[in-house]
Length: 223
Ligand code: DX5
Ligand code: ZN
Image 1 (cartoon, rainbow, N blue to C red):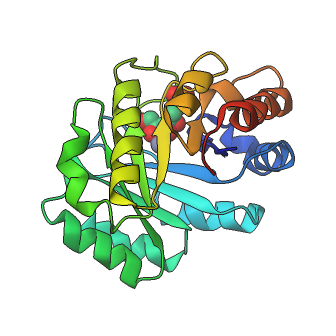
Image 2 (cartoon, helix red, strand yellow):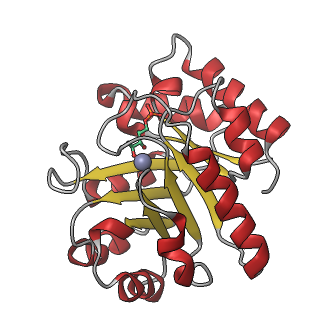
């Protein structure tokens, strides 16, 4: 078993309520909200107001993925609207340890994310502090990109480190997840799959979501 986190980046925002209800009824465990600042990534998306709106639509926990420079500037704003997870990027934060502790002190679960080219080793010392590690399997900024195969090794390496360190964070994987890529990602050790295009751009959102959920049951090794 593993969790499924549909990303509303690919949803039709004019039908957000209806589409969130559909994924909720078809196996979604979390709702993933991609926050982009136009600096850390070349795209602009949502702020805390979107997290707050999603929380009024669904009882599912919200997973806020902050692709922003200097996340310390934004953590308080996001914590106020109470997503379950606030995930920040290693590459965007000089005082990462401080920022992770700040998220936890404000009552949210803390996640750290690394881009495809960032080695897992760079977050080793945080692995006993974080609740979630998000491995980017595309270069962040846009939905609908192709999965980068070498990131599979990073998932395996992280799963090994977790075992050795007896740590308990979740391993989340984001980017290019679909029914073709999901099995190997799950077998490598992922506990949470993020999927945008594969769900919200499908002909049937319900079927696409249910199909991915089935794969999390079949191939998920952890949660
Ligand atoms: C990419 C975002 C992803 C995005 C994934 O920068 O972090 O969460 O929604 O989209 P797909 O599943 O379409 O690759
Ligand atoms: Zn994301």
